[in-house]
Structure formats: structure tokens, C-alpha cells
Amino acid sequence: MSESQPHLTVVGEPTAPNLERLERPSFAVYEGPTSADGRIFRAGTWYHGIKHANNDDGGQPYDVWICAPLHVDAETVNSDDGSVGRLLRFRHRGRVIEHVMPMEALAGKGEEVLKALMRQGLEIEYNQRRHVPAYIASHHGLNRILATTTRPGWHDASGAFVLPHRIIGDADVRFQDSGKGAHLFTERGSLESWQTDVAHYCQGNPVLILSVCCALAGPVLSRVGVNGGGVHLVGDSSSGKSLAQSLAASVWGNPGIFAASWDMSKGGIEIEASSRNDTVLILDEIKRADPKRVQEMAYAIANGTGKGTMTREREGRPKLYWRVLALSSGERSLSEHAAISGNSAHAGAELRMVDVNAGTRTYRAFDDVHGMAGATFHRKLTTAASQHFGQIGPAFVERLVKETDPDHFHRRFTEIRDHFEAASPQAGRVADRFAVIGLAGELAIEYGLLPWPATSAARACRQLFLEWLASVGDGNAEDRQILTALGDFLALHGDSRFSDIAATLPNANVRQRAGYYEVENGKRLYLLNRASLTEAASGYGRERILRTLETYGALAKTDSGRRQKNYRLPGGGSARFFVVDPDRLDTEREATA
Image (cartoon, rainbow, N blue to C red):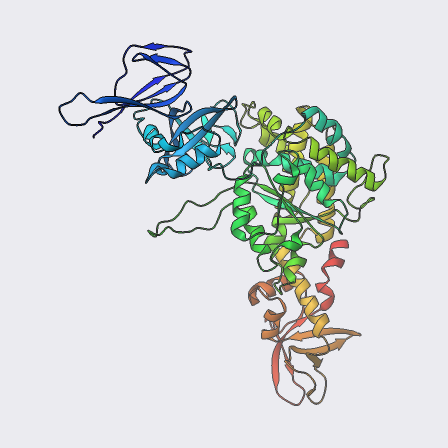
């Protein structure tokens, strides 16, 4: 018995066509009952074959129903890695299902294809399932070619905004995934109900306004050239931080599903960020993060690039990429949590995940509970966010894609950014983040999507930015960390590792000596040796530490232009030390001066 190469016959959409004769072997798709070769074929994908007992006979025709009507509509090209696939289409319970299948899934017996299609509801004749991959592979020279992407968000080649369940914008592009991931972008209720029951009560609450606008700012980042990063809501347990995050999550989907957690590896963070590209990454409870890795994870979120890996053939795998703002929460700041593991805080990590006070406001995280008790206000908004979600985010993007002036968003951003005063470049980067969050809110107000007065979003973001600026100062973050570390070191070891330089004999009680001190006008000046200087500000080189001390006038004495001063030692001999004025290390006093 042998079979020749099948041809493809597609009868699309007619109700009851009449085909006089079938070409065999061939595949055929019938949308309804179809008459051919003297019999009626029910709707579905068929294989019309022919069996040959020997080479001389004409063969015996046979027909096999493979599956429900399955159409191969186009060739796909993945914009992320260039891989080729097929766009498949079928119906399940009245819904049109589209599935992007990579061609590599046809390798072997095609079991991955069968799994993906059956998972989404395609009815397949089990005993004939081997024909399904062959049917798909029989489509060659497809005229329609469309782009696909494995990431949600802006599709740069087409200008469309891609979500797993819809494409916003006039472009022939599709989202490509395995179908196994969680459905993050879901909808319930209506935009009007969300505006009435959720957005209305955010008014008068800077933390809630910031959270909602942070969720809307993701699609705006690329339009104004601002990098990703995050804000970290800090407050005691049950202060309202999680509610603020739930309201932000309701912009794009079900808060219980869309929100993520710090309880994952760095690789997990990369996957979660990529799956929410150009939207918002919500991370609850920083105390669940690994203290040794939390700063590294903050860097990764802001930088938008995953870790490079290699295949067995020692070729680089495609990295994960994303552009996202993170809305984090916790009872501790990022630097406090990192310190649990003994790691010193990195200024860069703190700037990428800046603290927002969500615990000591009028009503803990809230400033206005709209005449309700705090607990009642919390329950009302929690319930509302769980019943109305996923509407405003896509509606906001629908308005963004209609803007044809490429400079419009830059102009609007500049107008708002001018009100976020920051002297240092580092504070300026944080100001950019708060400003783009405010911009997103103001645009949504103009579009009629947020029922708030004009400028209320920008004012709330500016208020929280100024609160952050007042708490840390407008100086260089690395300088601030170095001064703080030195001050803490002197406070901790002032009497145990230092002794009076004016003493006649060495102090035998000092172990692991860090230096000496001398008293001038009733104040101690600390004389640090070279080793203790770098030990005190661990993670920074000596030259960087000295540059900070000079900038803030903390080097009290020098010799002939040198940064060190020579002293006679108790018991004889001499040595050079860095003379530090501890009063100049008080960053909190400098910030409030």
C-alpha cells in the first residue's frame, strides 16, 4: 500500500457546495456540509486519500475526518528572533481562535502542535491526529505574511500596541505565545463603573493617584525617552500599600492575577517584567525578596535587559527585553532590606527604586478617606477593584495611538517636568520618573478616562517627589552613602578602635586599630589609617571616598597639599592619617539645613 503526495483543497465558508470530483490525495477544509464524489462530507478538515494494493490498480479511495475546520491563514515572522511560523484559525464554542505556531513545532511527530491546539479547544479525531501536522505543513507559498511578537506592548515595526487578546492600532501583527502562561490582561465590569467606584476615591490621595498613574505610564515611557525604574511604597503592615497596588493592577487586569511578588529569582523577575512590557510590574512585600539579590533585581527591572544564556551549540539565546515601571511595596526600604544580608546599599539601586511614604500620612497610606472610616474606605476600594478592571489601560492606549504628532508627548512632558526642580543629575533622573507618571495621569484626564480635575495627577506626583527629595537631599547619592557609612563607622567604633593621639603610651585595649582621635575645642577629629578608610565605606575605592570628603569639607587637616597629615604616635614613631571632621558627615543635618 502506498500514498502519493497530497494536494490541498480548501472550501471556505459556503454552506453546501457541490464538488463533482475530489482530487486525491488531498486535504480539504469544509465549513459546512459539502457534497462531493456522490457523498456528503460534514464540516471539518478532511484527508481524501487513495490506497494502492499494487502499482497496476487505480487505487481505492478513502476519506478521513481529521479535525474541526482548521485554516492556515498566513506565514508569520517573529520580530524578536526572525523565526517563521503559521497563523492558524478555528472556532470553539462560537469564538474565533487564532494561534501562531512556530514551524519548528512541526519537527518530529508534531506533538507540540497538537497540544497547543487541543489546549485551546480544537476538536481532533484522536486516531487520526497524525494528519494534523501534515495538513499544516502542506501549506506552501502563502501570500499573506504578518509579523508576530512574544512580548506585549509597543511593536516598533508596525506602531501597534500588542496585547495577548487584542491588537490596538492599524497593523497586521499578532501576539505569539505557547498558551500555557497566565492570562494577565483580562477585563471585567466597565470603564464607567471603574471610574465611579475606583478612580473617584483616589482624589485627595497622592499615593493612590501615583499608583494608578504609574500603571498608565508604561505605554508613555518610549514616547518621551524615559527609562524604566520604580517607586517603592514604604509603610507598616496594613497601612494601605497593597490596596494602592491593587488599584494600579486594575488598570490592566484582575489585581489578584496581574500583580506579582518579590518572592522569585532574578530569572523570574525577568520573565514577569517581559510579560508586562510597556505596562506596569507590581511587586508586593519586599521582605519576601532575597536580601542578597534584591539590589541586583532592582537594577535588572530598570535596565530592561535579561541575562544572556547560551544554547548547547554555544550560541547566544535571545535575551528577554522590557520597558516597564515597577510599583513595589514593603515595610522596609530597599536599602534596609539589602542590609539584612550584610550588603551595603548601592546608590544606583536606591535611585532605581525610590521610596514613597505610604505609612505616616493622615490615615497611614491615605490623605482623604472621603468621610468614611479608614477600614471601610479600604474594604470599599478593595471590593471595587476586584469587580471592575482591565478597561482603562487599553482605552488609554487607544487614544495614544491616534496621536500623529511625534513631538506632542515630548512637549507635554517638558511642560510637566519643568515643575520638578532637581539640582543634581541623579535627582533629575528620579524627577523624570515622577514627571512621566504625572504626564500619564494628565493625559488620561484630558482623554476623559480619569474623573479628576486637571493638574491633579501632576501635583500629586510632584508632592511625593518633593517629599522624597526632602528625605534624601538633592546631592549625589554615592556621596550621601559614603558620608553615612563613615559616620556610622565612627559612631560604632569611636572608642573601641580609636584612642587619643596625645597619649604618652599606646592604649593596649584597642584591637584592630582603625586610627586615633585628637580633641580640638571640645570636639573630636578622627585620624583614620588607609585600611580603615576603605573598610568604613565598603564598596567604594579610596580615591572615590576622598573625593567625597573633599567635596563636603570633611578632611579637616592636610600637610602641604597632601590629603594626609603626619602625627607623632604614642610611644614613639610617626604615621600619616586622614583627618575627618565627623560633623561634616551628618547628611541628615545637611539635607534639612
